[in-house]
Length: 399
Image 1 (cartoon, helix red, strand yellow):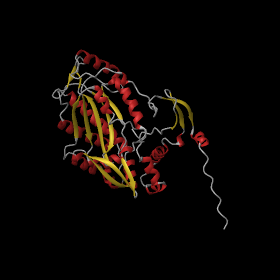
Image 2 (spheres, helix red, strand yellow):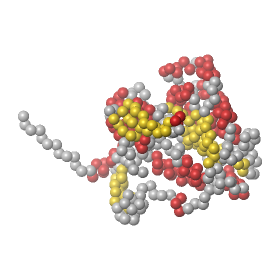
Image 3 (cartoon, helix red, strand yellow):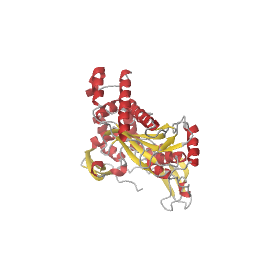
Image 4 (cartoon, helix red, strand yellow):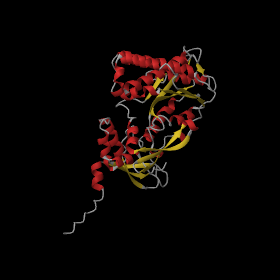
């Protein structure tokens, strides 16, 4: 994919140091660290390496990446490595995609308590899937899946939700057979919605009672138990949004599908169109109008404010595994699932691995497509020494 004409790093440079001064009320050291990493990514400030094509001998110099998970330029390689590690765990069955979304009323509370609310979102959605799938009226099986947290919508507004990718079936309670979901259907959405709402509100009640929630600004009144309980009651007035896509076929299809969700950041550089008169123009997809692509204009400071809304707490894990995919259970239950599926093949088995499934080099030669081999590394200081000298300044003429 060609390099986009405009990047988030360019927008940060255009905003300059005055953006930090204007954003002191909400800008933290973590925001500053991420901002610095994005600006320095793939520049001489991080050092680099000298590479040579193993096929045609073409040589090139590349600067190092920042590897920050919020950087738009660093996620493609991380995604490819993660997908390659997951390839061996994909079961030869249909896969379902389920999305659990928090209502807008809880978005301000989530912004002030990211670690607690996002963790509760993971727990409540996972417990909902496990509970409903275990019910004999629906599936009657023990399932496994992984969940990915997203906190944005197409307009970069705060919109916390988790994407769950689930094999459409599971192990029987006695672990003796594989139970497949019905064709074109996984679990009832209305049941998922109501169970999810109940579990999340119960979790909120427990966090408040334990004193683990913080309230600032307009939310200070919710610190009182009576006010918080009243707010919780309003959450039962409407059904919560749970989306379940009909199961799609094949593990390889699932692998490609996962790449669209696992390592996304709030906005990719390829969605940026222009920076004009202090405004950022970017593309967004209007889901209410059949996913029609539109253009949006935002003031530069507002665009960056929305971008940094989606910074995750330090050390927060945004991809988590549950059920028989959980790390403590997969060693015993995944081989069992493969064995049962071998005895009872699924309707759509995964295609056999081919030569094209082998991992590709991270960087290929732009001339012949051959793999580039590392020849030499250099630090940021060494990069400055190798750089051409700055142009000499002409002396001012005597007055």
